[in-house]
Length: 290
Image 1: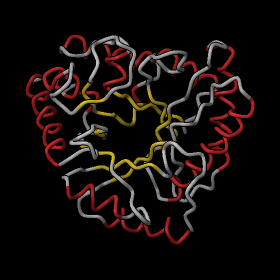
Image 2: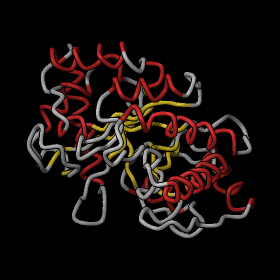
Image 3: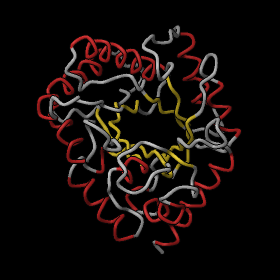
């Protein structure tokens, strides 16, 4: 398993790689623009190419993931918001593609009471439109649909819903899935014993398919099981606990995947000690599996 961390990109993006290396991360995740603003950051082709070169030659960090802007809502019934969301997703994906990212993680959004089935065609169209809008540099950068914590009218609160989104998009091979441990816990899916982890991975296999599971977000939880709130905590300090995370991290089907920390640290994101705690939980999980 490759342990990673969400880090600040910095000017020109390349500092993200050095920041990741400083805290011992194998993988980094970055925002391609401010996560809470619509206006995309503009990067020239020379900046994107410089990042690809730096990533290829970096001695410590093996790959980069990007996270799409939080404002994007492909499921909205509001036409104006839908248009802004589609344009923003396309801009985010273009940058992710340009730097050679392994995936762009996306929160699908909320249908705001219109209903999942009503929102589904627009979600699928928005995803396909974005995927078809970018110029592929080396290999297509997939959009990774993240499971939601289950609050309000969010889309993707279960793997069954994520599978329906992928099916509605024609099973496009450029769509994958990112499993967030805190969101899973908050949405009421248990995984803190080997038996529960086995059941979870069987569910993933039966719905979205293990071949689409390309990334983990490794987070403890500030809120209790089933709280339906997106609140991350440092590994071992939350209601899941290091032991609970270990039961999942040791599962054979997850080995080799990147596991990206999105924890608060001391207020400025993952630290070296958080990366070390994640590796410890993973190693503990391997021991649990014998």
